[in-house]
Image 1 (spheres, rainbow, N blue to C red):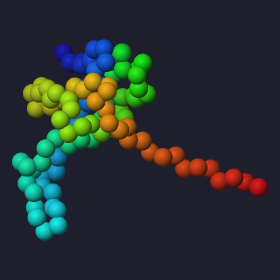
Image 2: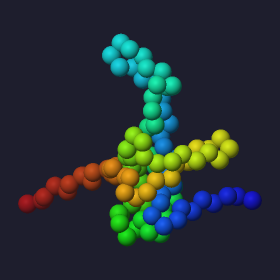
Image 3: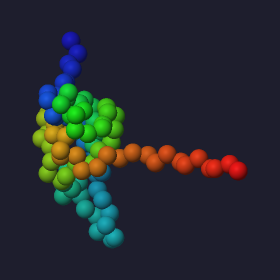
Image 4: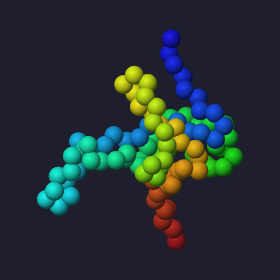
Length: 102
C-alpha cells in the first residue's frame, strides 16, 4: 500500500537538495562530510494552516536557515519537516517584462 505524508497545521514537508560530493573553494577541496545541510529545498506537502501565513505551493523551491527543519528518515528517503516561519526565501523565476509597443 502506498504511503502518503500529510503535514499538520503550520508545517511543511520538504526535500532538501542533495549536497555535492565535494566543493572546491579556490584550490582547496572540501569533502562532503564537512558540508552541513543544504539550505535549498523543494516543497512536497503543505499543512492547512500554512496558507493563512504565506503564499507557497507544492513544487516551490525555498531556502531554509542552516539549522532549520527536522530530518525524518523513511527507509532510504530523507524528508524534512519545517514550520512556515522557518522559510527564509522563496525561489521564483522572474517573468520577463513585456516591451511596450508604440
